[in-house]
Image (cartoon, rainbow, N blue to C red):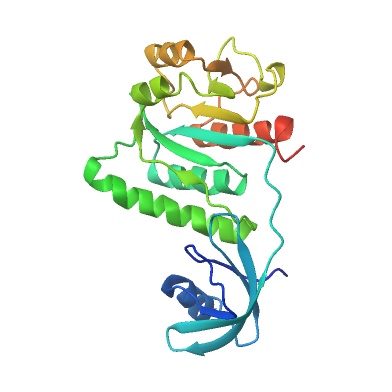
Length: 245
């Protein structure tokens, strides 16, 4: 069984020992009930990690010792950016969690005309922190040392215009008449995947995206839910050109 992993905001300690952050300390001592001498691993979300041993527990404080640098995880061959239309809170959490596990480098919540979820400005910071914590937990579980970049929610029209000059592949999932990803040339360096809301993109939104260079693609003959489409699309990209290959 692999050692429990905990996120520690950068920079990682340079000395022989350190103290776990409060949330990680609570999880280690109260939830996992680890004991002195147990092996653990800490990572900074930037790709760095350290093996360590639980050295002491004093109330809410958990001290680690015997810190040793881990071998870095090789970078994936394709940088995947997920632009996900805002959906219900549980669905959005699920997308962030699974996209993190599948190796997405950047996640951008997108407000569309048919988005069921409407994120008010006064709630944006709270939701961003919540999504960050979801991504942290996913990294702890799956062994990933680099957190995905989580951007602030953006309107579709503004974001699409900003992406006009973006390099690499740009794909939008659309039903009807679109070809599969396997028919597209291999993206150079990065791939941006744009996923619509529960009700799909409007015709105007789809046209605007295509005018900005997004290629319409299809994932098989079935109509997928927004959260399913996101994960299926990421998995397809990783299989064709990423670290599944």
